View 1 (cartoon, rainbow, N blue to C red):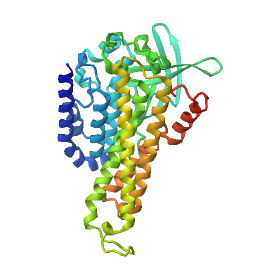
View 2: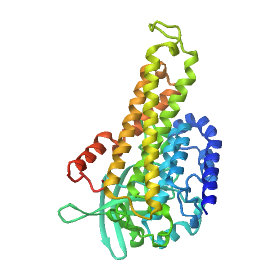
View 3: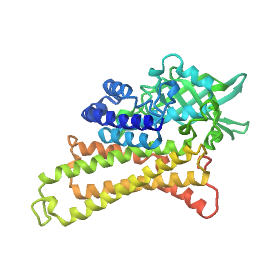
View 4: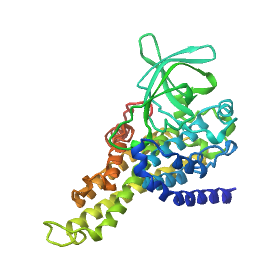
Length: 399
């Protein structure tokens, strides 16, 4: 079985690299049409990218998080929007597999499993929910930043139950058919324009009990998927996996920037630098060395996180909460390093990237957009890790 799994992972990486150039050639189109082109979606589906973390019994590959991470970085080098959507849609396959019962899974996958695609947001901007017989009624719900909304068939959302005083009593995770939501065309943005990360709304949507679970239980590894407990992948710590899925595309984008920077060096003349060519300037040598080291360090952090997640999953034991918090700090720190590397490359680049025709501009805008994600914040993640170091509790339950 191990040999088969390794072969499947190897094939997945080969297939990803084979389609990467096509996806790179569509990056401009992806930004212009503000969604992932159908040709790209079809390639991702044909090569099982979206299903790489889905249980095999439902048509997935069940690869480990390390393989998933490498695939997402490769796709994100080709196109940030495509890598972002692939990353989030694929990780939700694992999250849905872990979170819910076999009854929910059969409802989702029984008819047309190849058409199933997940999108979602774990935290609502507003949500009015009440318990009713057999489940919950979402009277009104609003979630922003729902990446992949234009292609999804099922949603995976977080929602709150409140008491009479409006205080949150319980946090739930739910899955719903996407045709029960309304998509708002509001994703007009600086970068990641092709992700379709629109706001979505629910109004008077009934969600049965078997498609609901406790957010806190899931965070702590108390999964409802009893039928999958013998599979290591579905013991992976949910929230570190989710935040890792947000951090990996940035690594791909910045690695692509570095390659493009190197590709242009032989042809770039220098002004006011005491040399004819930029590649001969001492400032270039220092800046590109610093950028390279920061990117390599960020990659080591992120891949080490994927390895840790897999190691705990192999033991069929949920990663301890203290280590989960440290993992989130590591992801935030990686995001900080990647941003510093971008600034080093910009300092060495001059102003050529300001032109719309320069592909570096799109990469910069895409990175700035994903870097700003609150869950990747170096400040917030490091603050909560620091609270742990001095014996205090973190500021939020997700930590």
